[in-house]
Length: 190
Image 1 (tube, rainbow, N blue to C red):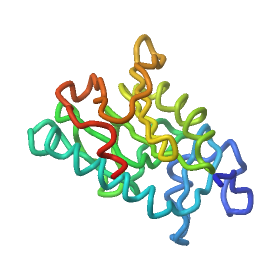
Image 2: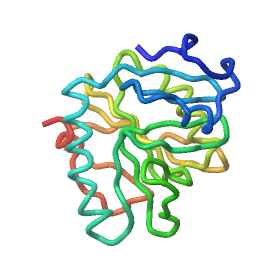
Image 3: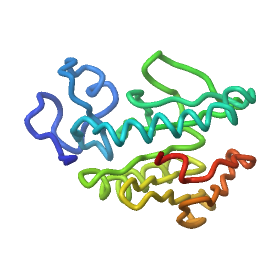
């Protein structure tokens, strides 16, 4: 379960920044900051990681091999703003602005963020991250539900997300960032 971490030495909750986050010792735990609050997430399970690997496998030909940009996976720090640092399960940085600051950090929000939810992170992914991604200008957001074997697609219009639908089975995703992406959703759950 994703929980605020009150026992980690550092600023008071609500005042965490990327600099204070980056100063944390490497204790093997996965942290994120949203609106200045430090959260700790448990390690993902094998099903989660297999879905992440399959999504990356299918995105690579449409993004990296097509010369459009990069496909990356957590752990990588994405600094959305001074008080929000997240690690999307999968992110796509299209070539137009795909630059690097540090090996473990992007300097801008991704064009596409993908979260594979688990029972302990579903609320966080659907509320906190959803709102943080929209504020940061992430153009497209996919929420992958392993138990339902679905992908929900959101696109940013006028600074808020609009749902394009929930897709499953042989349906393909109507991605605005990767318009020719023609992989059936069921392939993510093989």
